[in-house]
Image (tube, rainbow, N blue to C red; front, side, top):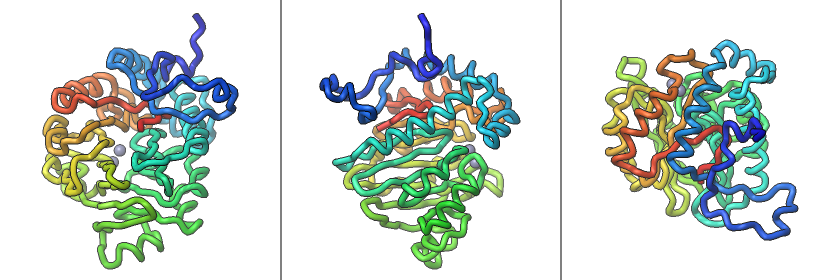
Length: 318
Ligand SMILES: [Zn+2]
Ligand SMILES: [Zn+2]
């Protein structure tokens, strides 16, 4: 049986959550509305092994060259990175949100696009074509000043187009106005139908890492999202969500944090791991969150929050 590259990494057997059988007319639609993907643990496990193999073939310097020239060099993981962008862009345009529950896509790394009834925003968007989203976005959230969580071209495009960029380190006129004299931008903000509570957490327990990451508690109507960027050793007590139990926590469990402790502390209804196989980090380096580390993190989280899964690049999560 011939397997397409798309099928190889994304899995033809993926189960779409709540997907009804489309009416005949929808089959002829050039851009059918996207649906969130839900995989069985078994299917996810197969895909972890495939992605691990595909990403292991991409050394960090090859990835960095691809970021400049866009040439995927026939490498499945780079093709997946390119396809993920195309898929998310297409689906964002084709999707309308009607209730509180937003539509959320994983682009790459800890980078997500969120669509609500009234807004479109990004969190840690980091893709070589990310600037193409700038004209469509209302605002961007950036967790911290590391190159795998933001790109200067994207920040320039957003700021140049008068868009809001929320972060604890960038200069953005519209956010400067919103944050007032809060030096690190800690506060509560409302932008259209989205409320954002920012807080500082530790990227690592070294001096530079203390309060280095901005975590985002995001409320859309009654629906709560939590994104914690890179969170390191000892920061578990700083993971506070006063607005309530997150409906979804976008979590990177590979930065030194104690996964079980953090999962218990946040008590989210659903957890999705991101920052998988960060290609900018060396192969077999712990910063890449490869297969053994992913499996260990899943094993630590699932006894506490059973609904823990992975977002592969391009997945629509919600
Ligand atoms: Zn970082
Ligand atoms: Zn990172």
